[in-house]
Length: 291
Image 1 (cartoon, rainbow, N blue to C red):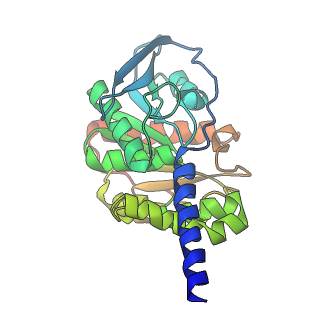
Image 2 (cartoon, one colour; image 1 turned 120 degrees about the horizontal axis):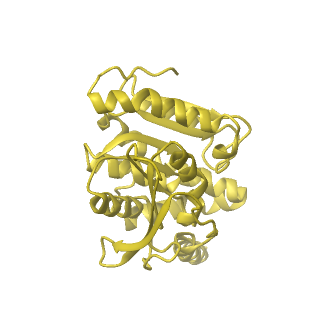
């Protein structure tokens, strides 16, 4: 009997270890959507590990209002953020979009995670060399808040789309949404393996843990029907920021990735930028936001 239990346990641990490797490598779902506005520069810049990141820099044809850096989510590439960047370009901003390592045509890098996404955002921030508006989606949003906490003073406004609050809880939710039985049977152990690989630091870089450190205006964008990270993640994240610093825009009927496709999205972005960017420039402390 004990031998049978030991064999089953060994098989389970081996299977979940292999699944941990798989979920950190797959899927990859790049899209193709090149910028069609402004003056486009396509370049490559150094990454943290000696590799390279592919980067687009799109300058508006009129004097720029500033720089917006956009970071895509897991499995995607820089092209995924082109429609969002186009909106900022129409508003007169210089937009910079990169592909994280192991995504798009950037350098390969095994075992990417939110911290690695943050390292790539920091590499782009160093290349830019001036404060930016920082926009991240999903894993890119988690990377954005990590980067903003590490590079205080370099982010003027922060946009977090489809972000989660607590890393481990979010991963378990993601796996259950992918497949309920998979999430229940294997999800908790896969998350534990990840935490072991990351030296039990996953909770320390949870967005809700880092939010209290950020004294900047934040717009949280979340789909009403997001099944990867249900809406309670957005509420918890909003309430984790210092009082009056974060506002939540709930995109009606949207899922995890379609908030930017809703009719109300452009107006929400423009209103937030027009209201709070001037205060950041002048140093005004009037950051009270509606909730």
